[in-house]
Image (tube, rainbow, N blue to C red; front, top):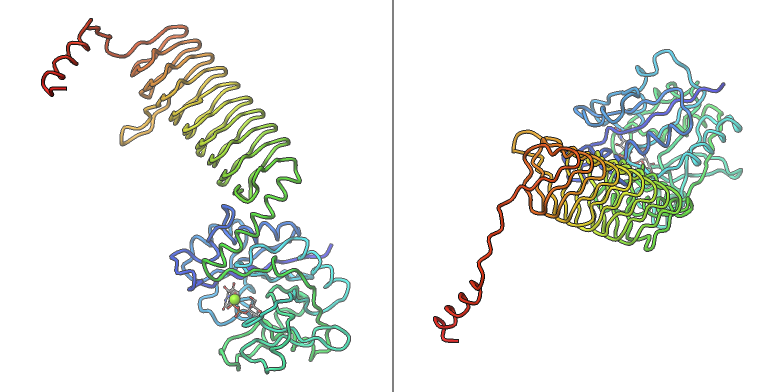
Length: 446
Ligand code: UD1
Ligand code: MG
């Protein structure tokens, strides 16, 4: 078995993001960029993953767990950053070491797999992932020899005008022969215009040792590096396109794909239909045949087969909807568990609640779950009927088959099959409306 280590560079602060958050913690499709890269690399089944973090980056460390971490206290260049993983490697030897950047979230496991394969079959010291860029500006250029092998990587800052005309660029991703990695790193010098230890110099060093270097190419869409908020939005757009295509390929109808925003972990069943302008946050699972109508927002929820959601529904974390539940317009659910066939179709807030199978929640029902200090649960049994505009003041229980009268403020538990009426009694004053109008007409002379 060949042994593979993955090194993810994430020490950069990302100054151009103008953020208090380390760059790699910014999210695309509801997931930090660093986690995208970690999860993609996990697809290769590596024996070790090391994330190189900068000083005081607790969020990066937390996102890297349970993988190994290495620290780069001072940003002295990509070559120096890779050298910092040595303590994390200990005495382990790897056949291949894959180096990726934490701010390049769209790279695919397929591309990385091709690179590892190329390293194995060619026995190159280094395999570099190249991309063709129309206006390559600051990217390092890949210089090939007559046989098509990689001769050198020249950083833009060090390149001659002739080399700057090359359009084959260094994406930054490399697979390095683990047997020579640290030897090559140790020989990098910083006598260049930035005074940095360039990882890219290992290509020239390996060539001088008589070793081979190779290039694998991938489309530039995969290799978008995020340095600014504009780059972040561009990466989001590319990823959304991929997620929408995968959703449709998996049997979901997107009536207007461009207006549906999926999370990286959204799970969609077969024959799901999603109308325009629907947004998924992280942690959503949608069962078969669910219809999600326009302008709904769903996060942290599991929705059972055949459910009908929206339009204009908001489903928040902790919500679990069984089969055939209906949640209609202007209904908000938070930590709400709804049994099979339960319905809440209009203008309702259900928070910290269990609703039994077949229960109907009338328009305007509110679970009063918060008193400014604590949150309290409402438990509604099966086949209950909650009258319109009921306020259920938690903690409170409504038994199986019970009813609440419209407009009730329910502060005590309601027994099974009972009716609770919690409102002022109606008073009728015959003729009073006509008297009122006559008096007003006289006063206003109309
Ligand atoms: C690097 C490459 C360049 C390539 C480009 C692709 C080098 C010398 N140059 O240039 O050939 O075309 O990426 O985007 O490698 N980092 C650290 N510690 C450091 C320096 C960098 O962790 O001391 C991390 C950064 O956070 C970033 C990545 O390494 O994720 C790349 O660093 P960056 O400074 O952006 O390198 P470039 O100058 O863009
Ligand atoms: Mg860069």
